[in-house]
Image 1 (cartoon, rainbow, N blue to C red):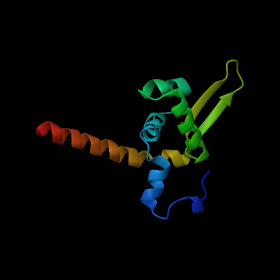
Image 2 (cartoon, rainbow, N blue to C red):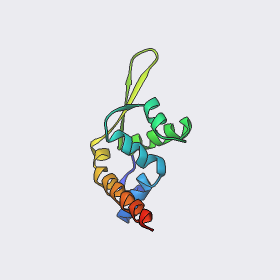
Image 3 (cartoon, rainbow, N blue to C red):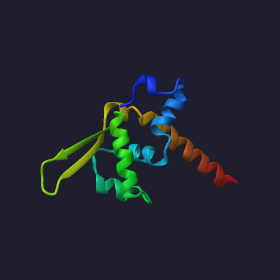
Image 4 (cartoon, rainbow, N blue to C red):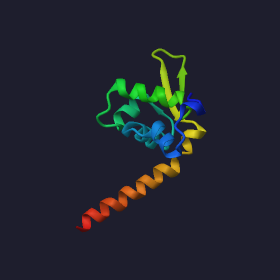
Length: 110
């Protein structure tokens, strides 16, 4: 997990450091609806490679945004969910959703 001294002094820059990637915010979008397995996430994130998804999930886990639970089964079952800190991104996600809807409706008017 990052320490406060690892993060930029600007809060906006901090948020962008942690979430300023297309795949990370879409992972949050998918996990806001509940726990998902790796395959479910990969299927819903059109165009993401297995390697990139794995990297982002590990980074997000290390930053305290995602929980990873491994079940002792053969084959192993792994589930991902948002931590409390990850769930706190819901208002950010909702604001982005609303802005995107408004933007698309304005384009439709032109």
